[in-house]
Structure formats: structure tokens, C-alpha cells
Image (cartoon, rainbow, N blue to C red; front, side):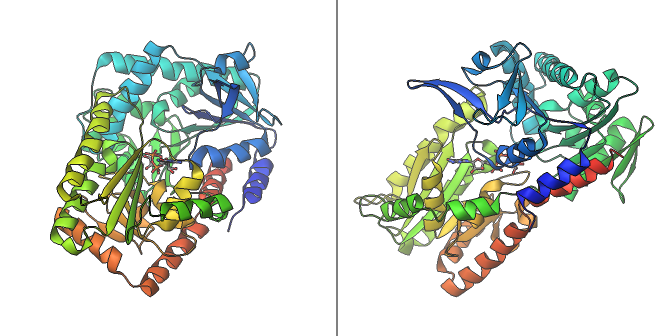
Length: 493
Ligand code: GDG
């Protein structure tokens, strides 16, 4: 198993004399006004939790969009803020955008054009020119902030994250001084679609050109790499090698590689055993909460790609087809609202409780109702208590780059008493072979899978979960980091 320390040592040695910069839309520390004064919040989610210790060890700069309402009060003239606040180890450089800029860049092109385009066009992507213009403009703001940080450096390693920043690499490379040694790497956290879906984008060439300014482009799976290569070949006519996964373009070679992301297994495993979690587990099973025989759990950012409605429809069919589970099975869905300014997400936020209510009304008996919908982000104790209590965790996206909830559930299932139902369209399915795999559109098959998961013997459940835990433990987020950094830093020499 790779540890945080191993990765820190590796990066420190490889990046000697080199400026290290991470660029992402989301920032690792957020200053917020609260009734008790300004508080610093760290976003939940594995990625910032994994990259923050790395940055603390290497002491680079993290360029990110300022998102807290007190952020502007805590930066210097160059928009820099030393973090962590109590014991500064690296620089957080904030990029500012007006509401109008955020509307076009984030809610517009990122989440109404690229997101649906990369997720099989489940909602029709918007091809509004003003969104595209806004995206270009904001990618330019990030490029300017990065340039400000690399000025005067002989060598820099810049690591971009995600689909918000496809154009920034080219903006940086084209304006870099000739004598500066730059290694640009990008990790794309969502799927890459088939080339003919990607080619629907009127600005497909510009997006690909922006990304090919990188030296290394990482995706979760091999298939996304292949789709990307095919897009580059068909849209740009570039020379690609499907065997080595390399692209030759503009006199440079670009490496495209799979790096399946994961969670911090060790920390989750430890946190899931905390006394607070044990107290919460007792509360969950108490008569006034969920005194029923079987508990199912779903945890998602509220997004149409996560298949929450399809999951509810399958639960409905399961209770209809197997009435012996009525009054016995309760499904707790925790949905954290996101992107709430985008119409498709607003509609979904309304639709989810409505469908839950419709199903509850159909089956409700006395105190029992089959679906408990919790809107909002759960605290870690409650989240881990649910993961530990659940007989089954249902992760049923229609399309998902990886899906960290599936891996978090496994890492938190310390007693090996839960079963994972996983959609065949989640990237995680490639590794997590001992999950029960479903097609979220196949209501009958999905309903049967819920029954199978609840009827599995304790022995078999334990065997499957042990094997899943071994996989996630071995391939944790530090392994992902190490693999990516190893390939990227080889390019520095
Ligand atoms: C993108 C890709 C890829 C959710 N609800 C609650 C809660 N969460 C946390 C989970 C998890 C995170 O949010 C969701 O991560 P996912 O990976 O499932 O999904 P995306 O946000 O879509 O992430 C995805 C990922 O990037 C990484 O590359 O895996 O495919 O789409 O950490 O725990 N956390 C808490 N309460 C909630 O109610 N505390």
C-alpha cells in the first residue's frame, strides 16, 4: 500500500527546483461569513483531501476559483492566501469571476455543454455561443493567474483538473517564454464520449487543441482514452497510436493514459470506527428512526447522470414484485443539491421528492414508508453510520466517470455486512467485480438484484465485501496520485 508519505517523498524528490502548480475550479479552502465570524471550510470529497497533503509537503501554488463570501477579504494584492491558515505550507491563489462570468463559464459551458456532452447527451447540450465565449474568457483568467505564478521560473509542472479548464493549457503554452521548461498535465474527471458525440460540439477543434497543449492527459478508464484518441484522429486528423495511447500533434508527443481514481481507504476505515459513528448507528436502528429489517442507502450529488429516479422506480417494482419485503425494507437516499442554477438540476430537485412521495403513498402502512429522502449534505458521522448500517448500497448512475461513493461505501463497511449494487455504467464497475451489477434502465433486472442483495447469505456477503475492500485498499487515492505523478514527472527530465 502506498502512503501519503511515500507520495510526498516521491514528489519532493522529482520536483526539486521546479515550480509545482495545481489548477482547478474548486478551491481547497473557502472563507465563509457565519454568525460566529469568518470560518474556513474545506470542501468534502476525496480529491482536495488527497491533493492538500501533497501540496503541504511540496509547497507549491494552487490556483482555483474563489467561491466563499469572505474569500476576497483574505488575500493579498496578488490574490494569494497562505494555507492551511493555522500553519501555512503552500499558496492558494484565487481567481475572481463576476456572477455573469460564473453563469457563462460554470453554469453555462461547463455544466450545460461539456457535462451533458461527456455523459452520453442525457440532457441535450446547449451550444449557446455566449457560453462558449464566457468559457474562453474564464479559461483566460486562470491562464493569467498561472502565468503570474510561473513568471521567472526555469521549470514548472502544472497539473490541471477537469473539464472546466480545457483551453487553459494552450493559453499557457503559447505564451510561455522559450527558455522555460514546462510540463503540463491534465486529469479529466468525467467520461470522454465516443468521437461522433464529441464532434457535435461546434467548438470541438478548439477544445481538443486546448487539451493537446498538455504533455500528459489522464482519464479514469482505458475506454475514455480510446474515445479521446478517436476524437483527436477524426476531428483534428492527428496521428494517434491506439497501442501506446500516444498522439503526435504540432511536433509534440502527448501521452494519454488511464489512472482510475480512488478514495483515502485508510482514513475512511479509521473514521468509520469513531465513537460518533457508533452512536449514530444506534440512533439509525432506534424505533423512532428506522426500526426495519433491511436498510438500503444511496448517496449522491443530485445530478441526472446519477440515476436516482431510475433507482426509485426499481425500488417501486421490487416492492410490487416481492410484497414480502413491504413493511420490512427502507431505503435512505441522501441527495446533496448541486448546480442549482441550471434548469435541469432545478427540475430534478423538485422531481426526486415527488417521485419518492408517490412511491411512499402507494405502499405506506402505519409508520412505515419505503423511501426516506434526506436533502442536503450529511455530516461524516451520519454518512459513515449509514454506510455501516446498510444491508445494501445502491449506486446506479446512467453514466459516471468513476463514482467515489461506491468506493467510500466499501472503505467504510468495516464489519463486511453490506452488499454493493453497482450500475454497469459506472467507471468503478471495471475494478469492483464482486458488486452486484445492474443496468439501471432494466427495471425488472434491477428489482431482482435488490432482492438478491438482501437475500445473500452473511458468509457470501462477507466474502464479497472482503475482496472489494482488498481492492480499494490496494488501489487507493495515493496509488492514483503516485501513478500519475510518476508518469508526469518523467517528462520533466
Ligand atoms: C466527479 C465524477 C468521479 C455526495 N452526497 C453526500 C456526500 N457526497 C460526496 C460523496 C463523494 C462525492 O460527494 C461524490 O463523488 P462522485 O465520484 O460520486 O461524483 P462527482 O461529484 O460527480 O465527481 C465522478 C469524481 O469526479 C472523481 O474523479 O468519480 O465520476 O463525476 O465523495 O461522499 N458527502 C456527504 N454527504 C452527502 O450527502 N458528506
